[in-house]
Amino acid sequence: MAQYSKGLEGVIAAETKLSFIDGEKGILEYIGIPIGELASHSTFEETVYLLWNGRLPKKDELAAFNDQIRSRYALSKDIAKLVLEMPKTGEPMHVIRTLVSALGVFDSKPNAIDLPSVRDKALTVLAQTPTMLAYYQHHRKGTPIVPPDTSLSLAENFLYMLNGKKPTPTMAKALDVCLVLHTDHGLNNSTFSARSVISTESDLYSALTAAIGSLRGPLHGGANEGVMKMLSQIPTVDAAEAFIQDKLAKKDKIPGFGHRVYKSYDPRAKYLKVLAKQLAEDTGNKDLYEKSARIEGVMEREKAAKGIYPNVDFYSATTYHCIGLPLDLFTPMFVVGRVGGWSAHIIEQLADNRLFRPSVDYTGPHDVRYTPISER
Ligand code: ACO
Image (cartoon, rainbow, N blue to C red):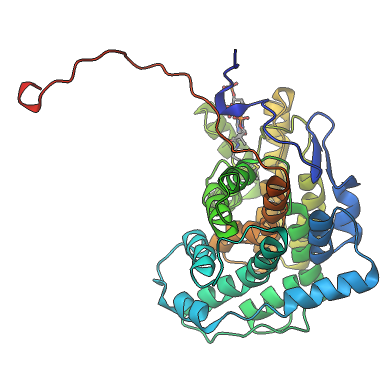
């Protein structure tokens, strides 16, 4: 007899060689390499190569991979036109979901799911998601579009396109580290969506579009925006304690805390905390970091015994703010990083596919007589 598990908690629905999580010990590894090692020494592009190939690249392999990504930064005329036709009032998560889907419309072979084709398409999405977001940002603000610069890394180029000037090495590095930390994370909700869609032998664009829709939710990647909104509602550092206590008394969930898998400190949050502190000091946003630290202190006293700690979204909010990203680009930034992980999972799923088709426990009535409309 199949066991019912609400929210599929504890259910193993796939095998993966990509990322390993030990939620009790707070461990995250990509292909066996601890996340802290990658955040300290790797780059986003190298991390994606690692996930797509199951090993770190040699020097010439990494150079070739970087070239492949950079050569695809520029949008086709059709996609660039479509970005400029998007309503300026759109939410960037809806816009990027639509544009990733549109990439499939303009692909002459969107349905090809052989490995080389999927990798090729995934490279385009990886390279162009930042360009589409930067173009949309200029479009809605009415500022001049800044075309991509292929001499720059993905993180540098995104900030360059967004701000019209090359970022400082500190800012580019901070964004790159954020992307590394967000690249993959087991069978999280959006990755499950991607794997579920591709398991029908659909196509990469449909799987990524579904994943973006899933990531947007405030219980998942949308929480980073929730954290920033909460921080801006708290007027001073000293007001943080009462604000959180009030929310907890109302049984509200605090965005950026808790996780289905981690019952100890999320190792990504540990890393982002250090990054957020440094950036907040460098950019005159000390208050923001101190409010966050104060909230963490309250939550530790009130909720750590229940295994509720900061998750990846908590300190990424301060980090993105200090990098200068507008609030509604926080979750789209998560998309940019996670395209690497989603694509790796799509490739892995296709290599050993079985249609996802769980069962439901029917709890409704039986044998109900059809009532004609005149008798209802
Ligand atoms: N603040 C206060 N209490 C919390 C929080 C929180 N952030 N998260 C969980 N709890 C409490 C719940 O109220 C519940 O308490 P109870 O047992 O007294 O009813 C208990 O902890 C278990 O919570 P669930 O929601 O059942 O745990 P679940 O595993 O389903 O939830 C989730 C995980 C959705 C992430 C939850 O912790 C949450 O809503 N957090 C806030 C949103 C958030 O930060 N999401 C981002 C997650 S990371 C990511 O997806 C990238």
